[in-house]
Length: 332
Image (cartoon, rainbow, N blue to C red; front, side):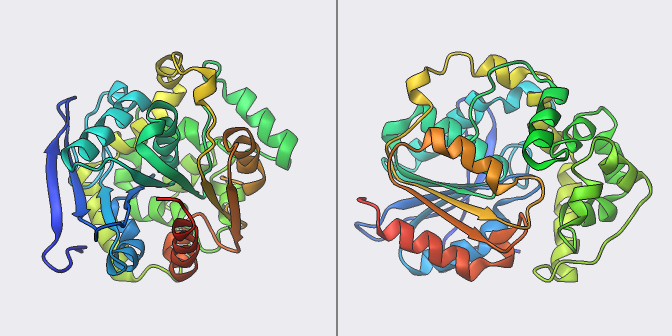
Protein backbone atom coordinates (compact mmCIF):
# COMPACT_ATOMS: atom_id res chain seq x y z
CA UNK A 1 0.00 0.00 0.00
CA UNK A 2 1.77 3.12 -1.18
CA UNK A 3 1.15 6.76 -0.36
CA UNK A 4 3.08 7.82 -3.43
CA UNK A 5 1.11 10.52 -5.23
CA UNK A 6 1.99 12.72 -8.22
CA UNK A 7 5.56 11.52 -8.44
CA UNK A 8 6.35 12.01 -4.76
CA UNK A 9 7.63 9.02 -2.85
CA UNK A 10 9.33 7.63 0.18
CA UNK A 11 12.93 8.54 0.88
CA UNK A 12 15.71 7.02 2.98
CA UNK A 13 18.08 8.77 5.35
CA UNK A 14 20.78 7.45 7.64
CA UNK A 15 20.66 9.56 10.80
CA UNK A 16 23.63 10.66 12.89
CA UNK A 17 22.95 7.72 15.22
CA UNK A 18 23.47 5.35 12.31
CA UNK A 19 19.84 4.29 11.85
CA UNK A 20 18.22 4.37 8.42
CA UNK A 21 14.75 5.91 8.34
CA UNK A 22 12.08 5.44 5.70
CA UNK A 23 9.84 8.48 5.36
CA UNK A 24 7.26 9.98 3.07
CA UNK A 25 8.18 13.44 1.84
CA UNK A 26 6.21 16.10 0.01
CA UNK A 27 7.53 19.60 -0.60
CA UNK A 28 4.74 22.08 -0.01
CA UNK A 29 3.61 25.13 -1.89
CA UNK A 30 5.33 28.45 -1.05
CA UNK A 31 3.95 29.89 2.17
CA UNK A 32 2.51 26.57 3.37
CA UNK A 33 4.05 25.02 6.50
CA UNK A 34 5.37 21.49 6.66
CA UNK A 35 3.37 18.99 8.71
CA UNK A 36 5.31 16.25 10.52
CA UNK A 37 3.14 13.22 11.34
CA UNK A 38 4.56 10.80 13.95
CA UNK A 39 2.76 7.48 14.44
CA UNK A 40 2.67 5.24 17.48
CA UNK A 41 2.26 1.56 18.39
CA UNK A 42 1.94 -0.65 16.40
CA UNK A 43 1.69 1.44 13.27
CA UNK A 44 3.61 2.68 10.26
CA UNK A 45 3.40 5.88 8.24
CA UNK A 46 0.53 4.25 6.33
CA UNK A 47 -1.81 4.89 9.26
CA UNK A 48 -1.67 8.57 8.31
CA UNK A 49 -2.83 7.85 4.74
CA UNK A 50 -6.14 9.71 5.10
CA UNK A 51 -4.37 12.76 6.49
CA UNK A 52 -1.61 12.59 3.88
CA UNK A 53 -4.01 12.57 0.93
CA UNK A 54 -6.05 15.40 2.44
CA UNK A 55 -3.20 17.76 3.34
CA UNK A 56 -1.13 16.96 0.26
CA UNK A 57 -4.07 18.06 -1.87
CA UNK A 58 -4.10 21.35 0.05
CA UNK A 59 -0.46 22.01 -0.77
CA UNK A 60 1.14 21.42 2.60
CA UNK A 61 4.64 20.06 2.96
CA UNK A 62 4.74 16.63 4.59
CA UNK A 63 7.26 14.53 6.48
CA UNK A 64 5.79 11.19 7.58
CA UNK A 65 8.35 8.69 8.88
CA UNK A 66 8.11 5.05 9.73
CA UNK A 67 9.24 5.42 13.32
CA UNK A 68 12.16 3.42 14.72
CA UNK A 69 11.24 -0.27 14.85
CA UNK A 70 8.61 -0.10 12.12
CA UNK A 71 8.05 -0.48 8.39
CA UNK A 72 11.02 0.45 6.23
CA UNK A 73 12.97 2.02 9.10
CA UNK A 74 15.68 0.19 11.05
CA UNK A 75 14.59 -2.01 13.95
CA UNK A 76 17.37 -2.17 16.54
CA UNK A 77 16.89 -4.80 19.24
CA UNK A 78 18.58 -2.79 22.01
CA UNK A 79 15.98 -0.85 24.06
CA UNK A 80 18.52 1.94 24.61
CA UNK A 81 18.10 2.91 20.95
CA UNK A 82 14.52 3.92 21.75
CA UNK A 83 15.11 6.54 24.45
CA UNK A 84 13.51 9.90 23.80
CA UNK A 85 16.71 11.80 23.07
CA UNK A 86 17.47 9.30 20.31
CA UNK A 87 14.08 9.75 18.65
CA UNK A 88 14.32 13.53 18.81
CA UNK A 89 17.81 13.45 17.32
CA UNK A 90 16.61 11.25 14.46
CA UNK A 91 13.62 13.44 13.61
CA UNK A 92 15.73 16.61 13.71
CA UNK A 93 18.24 14.92 11.38
CA UNK A 94 15.43 14.23 8.90
CA UNK A 95 14.12 17.79 9.11
CA UNK A 96 17.63 19.18 8.67
CA UNK A 97 18.25 16.96 5.64
CA UNK A 98 14.97 18.16 4.13
CA UNK A 99 15.78 21.79 4.99
CA UNK A 100 12.60 22.13 7.05
CA UNK A 101 13.17 25.11 9.33
CA UNK A 102 9.71 25.49 10.83
CA UNK A 103 7.04 22.83 11.01
CA UNK A 104 3.96 21.64 12.85
CA UNK A 105 4.22 18.41 14.83
CA UNK A 106 1.30 15.97 14.90
CA UNK A 107 1.56 12.81 17.00
CA UNK A 108 -0.63 9.81 17.78
CA UNK A 109 -0.07 7.32 20.60
CA UNK A 110 3.70 6.96 21.24
CA UNK A 111 4.20 9.50 18.46
CA UNK A 112 2.85 12.02 20.97
CA UNK A 113 5.73 11.10 23.27
CA UNK A 114 8.20 12.10 20.54
CA UNK A 115 6.25 15.31 19.88
CA UNK A 116 6.49 16.03 23.62
CA UNK A 117 10.26 15.59 23.74
CA UNK A 118 10.79 17.57 20.52
CA UNK A 119 8.77 20.38 22.07
CA UNK A 120 11.02 20.25 25.15
CA UNK A 121 14.31 19.99 23.27
CA UNK A 122 13.79 22.10 20.15
CA UNK A 123 11.01 24.63 20.81
CA UNK A 124 12.35 27.08 18.23
CA UNK A 125 11.89 24.57 15.41
CA UNK A 126 8.12 24.24 15.62
CA UNK A 127 5.05 26.40 15.07
CA UNK A 128 2.60 24.29 17.08
CA UNK A 129 1.87 20.85 18.47
CA UNK A 130 -1.08 18.53 17.84
CA UNK A 131 -1.71 15.46 19.98
CA UNK A 132 -4.14 12.72 18.98
CA UNK A 133 -5.48 10.21 21.55
CA UNK A 134 -2.37 10.67 23.71
CA UNK A 135 -1.66 14.16 24.95
CA UNK A 136 1.58 15.73 26.12
CA UNK A 137 3.62 13.17 28.05
CA UNK A 138 5.70 14.78 30.77
CA UNK A 139 9.19 13.32 31.32
CA UNK A 140 9.22 10.58 34.00
CA UNK A 141 10.04 12.02 37.43
CA UNK A 142 10.83 8.65 39.05
CA UNK A 143 11.95 5.15 38.04
CA UNK A 144 9.22 2.90 36.67
CA UNK A 145 6.74 1.78 39.32
CA UNK A 146 3.78 -0.20 37.94
CA UNK A 147 1.97 -0.12 41.29
CA UNK A 148 2.16 3.67 41.39
CA UNK A 149 0.83 3.91 37.82
CA UNK A 150 -2.03 1.54 38.66
CA UNK A 151 -2.85 3.61 41.75
CA UNK A 152 -3.14 6.79 39.67
CA UNK A 153 -5.58 5.11 37.30
CA UNK A 154 -7.64 3.54 40.09
CA UNK A 155 -7.91 6.87 41.87
CA UNK A 156 -8.89 8.69 38.68
CA UNK A 157 -11.10 6.21 36.82
CA UNK A 158 -11.59 3.35 39.27
CA UNK A 159 -9.59 0.71 37.41
CA UNK A 160 -6.23 -0.10 35.84
CA UNK A 161 -5.16 1.47 32.58
CA UNK A 162 -1.60 0.54 31.62
CA UNK A 163 -1.48 -3.04 32.92
CA UNK A 164 -0.53 -4.30 29.45
CA UNK A 165 2.84 -2.51 29.67
CA UNK A 166 4.26 -5.31 31.79
CA UNK A 167 3.36 -7.99 29.23
CA UNK A 168 4.64 -5.94 26.30
CA UNK A 169 8.00 -5.57 28.08
CA UNK A 170 8.47 -9.26 28.90
CA UNK A 171 11.12 -11.27 27.06
CA UNK A 172 8.70 -13.66 25.40
CA UNK A 173 6.14 -11.03 24.36
CA UNK A 174 7.41 -10.66 20.80
CA UNK A 175 7.53 -14.40 20.11
CA UNK A 176 4.07 -14.88 21.62
CA UNK A 177 2.32 -12.23 19.54
CA UNK A 178 4.22 -13.36 16.45
CA UNK A 179 2.72 -16.82 17.10
CA UNK A 180 -0.82 -15.43 17.41
CA UNK A 181 -0.74 -12.27 15.27
CA UNK A 182 -4.43 -12.16 14.41
CA UNK A 183 -5.42 -12.44 18.06
CA UNK A 184 -3.05 -9.62 18.95
CA UNK A 185 -4.36 -7.50 16.08
CA UNK A 186 -7.93 -8.00 17.29
CA UNK A 187 -6.89 -6.96 20.79
CA UNK A 188 -5.23 -3.76 19.60
CA UNK A 189 -8.00 -2.88 17.13
CA UNK A 190 -11.01 -4.19 19.06
CA UNK A 191 -14.64 -4.18 18.12
CA UNK A 192 -16.20 -3.04 20.39
CA UNK A 193 -13.55 -0.66 21.79
CA UNK A 194 -14.74 -1.41 25.33
CA UNK A 195 -12.92 -4.76 25.14
CA UNK A 196 -9.88 -2.84 26.34
CA UNK A 197 -11.45 -2.36 29.79
CA UNK A 198 -11.31 -6.08 30.54
CA UNK A 199 -8.72 -7.47 28.14
CA UNK A 200 -5.97 -4.82 27.74
CA UNK A 201 -5.98 -2.44 30.70
CA UNK A 202 -5.67 -4.93 33.62
CA UNK A 203 -2.30 -6.49 34.43
CA UNK A 204 -2.05 -9.97 32.91
CA UNK A 205 -5.17 -9.65 30.77
CA UNK A 206 -3.45 -9.04 27.43
CA UNK A 207 -1.22 -12.09 27.84
CA UNK A 208 -4.25 -14.25 28.61
CA UNK A 209 -6.03 -12.94 25.52
CA UNK A 210 -3.15 -13.72 23.18
CA UNK A 211 -2.28 -17.09 24.73
CA UNK A 212 -5.90 -18.17 24.27
CA UNK A 213 -5.79 -16.94 20.64
CA UNK A 214 -8.97 -14.96 21.26
CA UNK A 215 -10.61 -12.94 18.51
CA UNK A 216 -12.93 -9.97 18.16
CA UNK A 217 -14.83 -8.52 15.24
CA UNK A 218 -12.94 -6.38 12.75
CA UNK A 219 -13.51 -2.62 13.20
CA UNK A 220 -15.47 -0.93 10.43
CA UNK A 221 -12.45 1.19 9.46
CA UNK A 222 -10.41 -1.89 8.50
CA UNK A 223 -11.04 -4.13 5.51
CA UNK A 224 -9.88 -7.73 5.61
CA UNK A 225 -7.20 -6.84 3.07
CA UNK A 226 -5.96 -3.92 5.17
CA UNK A 227 -5.87 -6.14 8.24
CA UNK A 228 -3.88 -8.80 6.40
CA UNK A 229 -1.44 -6.19 5.05
CA UNK A 230 -0.97 -4.70 8.51
CA UNK A 231 -0.25 -8.09 10.08
CA UNK A 232 2.13 -9.00 7.25
CA UNK A 233 4.05 -5.72 7.63
CA UNK A 234 4.38 -6.11 11.38
CA UNK A 235 5.46 -9.74 11.16
CA UNK A 236 8.11 -8.86 8.58
CA UNK A 237 9.74 -6.51 11.06
CA UNK A 238 8.91 -8.48 14.18
CA UNK A 239 7.69 -7.06 17.48
CA UNK A 240 10.98 -6.68 19.35
CA UNK A 241 11.43 -3.13 18.06
CA UNK A 242 7.85 -2.00 18.70
CA UNK A 243 7.89 -3.47 22.22
CA UNK A 244 11.11 -1.59 22.95
CA UNK A 245 9.01 1.57 23.05
CA UNK A 246 7.61 0.12 26.29
CA UNK A 247 10.83 -1.38 27.61
CA UNK A 248 12.51 2.02 27.76
CA UNK A 249 9.91 2.90 30.38
CA UNK A 250 9.68 -0.37 32.30
CA UNK A 251 13.49 -0.55 32.50
CA UNK A 252 13.61 3.13 33.59
CA UNK A 253 15.85 4.01 30.64
CA UNK A 254 13.50 6.87 29.77
CA UNK A 255 13.68 8.20 33.32
CA UNK A 256 17.47 8.37 33.14
CA UNK A 257 17.43 9.82 29.62
CA UNK A 258 15.10 12.68 30.59
CA UNK A 259 16.96 13.81 33.71
CA UNK A 260 18.55 16.81 32.03
CA UNK A 261 15.36 18.47 30.76
CA UNK A 262 14.99 21.89 32.44
CA UNK A 263 11.67 22.59 34.16
CA UNK A 264 11.03 25.65 32.00
CA UNK A 265 11.17 23.46 28.89
CA UNK A 266 8.25 21.31 30.07
CA UNK A 267 5.67 23.86 28.94
CA UNK A 268 5.01 25.95 25.86
CA UNK A 269 3.28 29.17 24.88
CA UNK A 270 2.85 27.93 21.31
CA UNK A 271 -0.54 26.71 20.06
CA UNK A 272 -1.52 23.20 21.12
CA UNK A 273 -4.31 20.98 19.81
CA UNK A 274 -5.54 17.86 21.59
CA UNK A 275 -7.97 15.43 19.96
CA UNK A 276 -9.39 13.09 22.59
CA UNK A 277 -11.36 9.91 22.05
CA UNK A 278 -14.27 9.14 24.38
CA UNK A 279 -14.11 5.42 23.53
CA UNK A 280 -10.39 5.15 24.24
CA UNK A 281 -10.42 3.15 27.46
CA UNK A 282 -6.65 3.28 28.01
CA UNK A 283 -5.59 6.77 26.92
CA UNK A 284 -8.50 8.31 28.78
CA UNK A 285 -9.13 11.96 27.80
CA UNK A 286 -9.74 13.08 31.40
CA UNK A 287 -6.25 11.92 32.36
CA UNK A 288 -4.65 13.35 29.24
CA UNK A 289 -6.09 16.79 29.96
CA UNK A 290 -4.25 16.97 33.29
CA UNK A 291 -0.78 16.96 31.69
CA UNK A 292 -1.99 19.23 28.89
CA UNK A 293 -3.02 21.78 31.47
CA UNK A 294 0.54 22.08 32.77
CA UNK A 295 2.16 21.94 29.31
CA UNK A 296 -0.01 24.35 27.30
CA UNK A 297 0.51 27.87 28.62
CA UNK A 298 -0.63 29.45 25.36
CA UNK A 299 -3.62 28.78 23.07
CA UNK A 300 -5.07 25.32 23.76
CA UNK A 301 -7.72 23.77 21.52
CA UNK A 302 -9.43 20.60 22.77
CA UNK A 303 -11.74 18.47 20.64
CA UNK A 304 -13.22 15.15 21.70
CA UNK A 305 -14.75 12.63 19.33
CA UNK A 306 -17.01 9.68 20.10
CA UNK A 307 -14.32 7.39 18.77
CA UNK A 308 -11.81 4.74 19.74
CA UNK A 309 -8.05 5.16 20.02
CA UNK A 310 -7.71 4.91 16.21
CA UNK A 311 -9.64 8.09 15.47
CA UNK A 312 -7.50 9.18 12.49
CA UNK A 313 -8.61 5.97 10.75
CA UNK A 314 -12.22 5.75 11.94
CA UNK A 315 -13.09 9.46 11.82
CA UNK A 316 -10.64 10.65 9.18
CA UNK A 317 -12.86 13.39 7.75
CA UNK A 318 -13.55 14.94 11.16
CA UNK A 319 -9.90 14.69 12.22
CA UNK A 320 -8.75 16.26 8.96
CA UNK A 321 -11.22 19.11 9.32
CA UNK A 322 -10.21 19.72 12.94
CA UNK A 323 -6.52 19.71 12.09
CA UNK A 324 -7.07 21.91 9.04
CA UNK A 325 -9.07 24.53 10.94
CA UNK A 326 -6.47 24.62 13.71
CA UNK A 327 -3.52 24.84 11.30
CA UNK A 328 -5.14 27.66 9.34
CA UNK A 329 -5.46 29.58 12.58
CA UNK A 330 -1.75 29.39 13.35
CA UNK A 331 0.57 32.28 12.66
CA UNK A 332 2.85 30.31 10.35
